[in-house]
Image 1: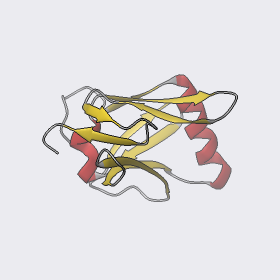
Image 2: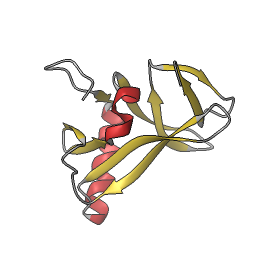
Image 3: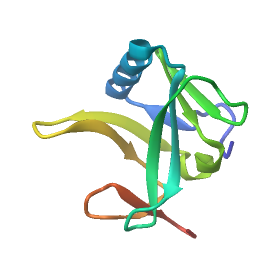
Image 4: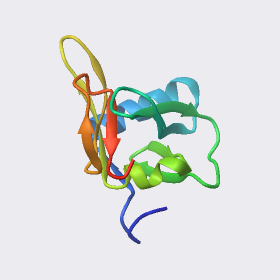
Length: 116
């Protein structure tokens, strides 16, 4: 992992911890795997999927019953990211507060990193 010894790769807010733990318990998943892929108007998009196994290359972050696995190709892009869960009148979902993002599209679904 592209990290600092003793420091978690990502942080998870209490709201996100509660939602991830609920999703894990609902269907018996091992956690959520997060990553990035090419796409969107800014060049990259976040991905999230249920994970039933932990890959030995995954960076695993566990907090209060919630487990997030960071896919190997995404680790350098996600280091230092805060994962939050927001609820509003119109929508609810996970939000990534990522210090590595240099540009984002207007809808917030697509991102760009330096040297991408």
